Length: 457
Figure 1 (cartoon, helix red, strand yellow):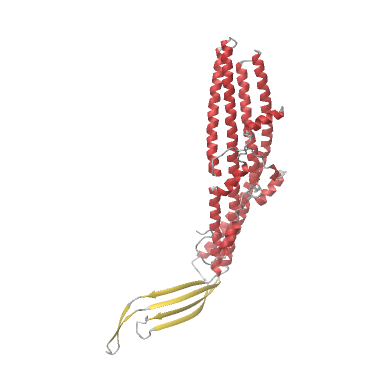
Figure 2 (figure 1 turned 90 degrees about the vertical axis):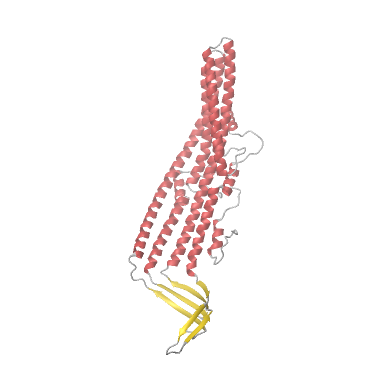
C-alpha cells in the first residue's frame, strides 16, 4: 500500500512520461551562465581587478612630453639712445620629463596589498552571489514543479467533485438523498474551482519568477532530489564548515585586511618622500632679448620632502582610518554570528523537512484509505454525501501538503548547503565551463599600457 501512495505522489510531481524533460542541473547551468545578477557581479570584480594595476603604477616611472609653438613680436629699446631692436619670432619648445618615486613611506606597497585584499574579497562576494543565484534557481525550479503538481491535484479534485455532484443528482432523482446533499456537492465543486484558479495563478507567478532567474521559460521539469550527499552528517560539523567556507565570512575577513592597509596608507603622509626627476628640453627663439636663438637643457634632480605640520589633516585621517578598521572588525564578528545562526536555522529546517515529508506521505496514505472506505459506506447508506465531500477535501489537502513537503525538502537541503558555503557549480558538478576570476586578474595586473579590455572592448 505504501508503494501505491508513493506512486501517487510521484505522479503528482510529473514523473510520468517517457520524454526527457529539463532537469534541475540544466536549470542551474543556465542560471550560472546567463543570470544578469551573477554576470553583473563578475563585471564588478573585473573592475576591482584594475585597482591592483593602478596601485602598481606607483612603482613605475611617470613620463610626460611637452610641446609649445606660436608667434611673438619683440621690440626692444636699446640703452643710451642706441635705438630700437625689433623682430618677429616663431618660438617653440619641446621637452620630456621622467619622474621616479623612490620612497613614499611605503604608501605604494600598502596600496598594492590593499588592492589585492579587495580583489580577494571581491572574489568571495562573487562566490556569495553565485550561491544566492543558484539557490534562487533551485527555489524557482521547485516552485514551478510544485505548483504544476498542485494544479494537477486541484484538477483531479474538481473532476472528482463533478462526478460526485452527478452521482448526487441521480440519487436525488431516485429519492435517496435530500436537496441539502445536492447543495453541499455544488458548494464544494465551486470551492474546488476557486482553489484550482488560485493554483493556476500561483503557477503563472512561479513561471515568471523562473524566467527571471533562469533566463528562459520553464519547459517540462523533472523531479529533483535533495543534496544530502554533499551535507555534513552532524550539526557541529556544519557549523565548523560554515565558519571557514561561508563567503560572507571570508569576504569580511578580506575587508579587515584592506582596512588595516588603509591605516598604513594614511600613516604614509607622516613620512618623508624621496624621488628623482630627469628632464631634457630644447627651445628656439624664446629669448625676448634676442641674444639666444636656441637653448638645449638636460637635468636630473633629487627631491626630498619632509612633512612638518599640515594643520592636522594627516593625523585626523590616520585616526579616522583606525576607527573604520574597528568598525569593520565589529562587522566581521556580526557576520560570523549571523552565519552561525543561518547554519543552525538551515540545519533545523532541513531536519524538519524530513519529518514533514514522512508525515505528509503517511497522511496521504491514510486519507486515500479513508476516502475509499467512506465511499463504500455511502453507497451502503451508512455515510452521507457530506461525509464523502469532507473526506475528499482531507485527501486533497493531504496531497497538497505532500507536494509542498517534497518541494521544501529539496529547497531546505540546498539552503543548508548554501549556509555552509558549498553551493557552487564545482561541488554540484554542473556541466558548464568554469568562470575563472583569476584569468582576468592576471591579464590586467601587470599591464603597463592599453585601454582595451581583455575581451576587446
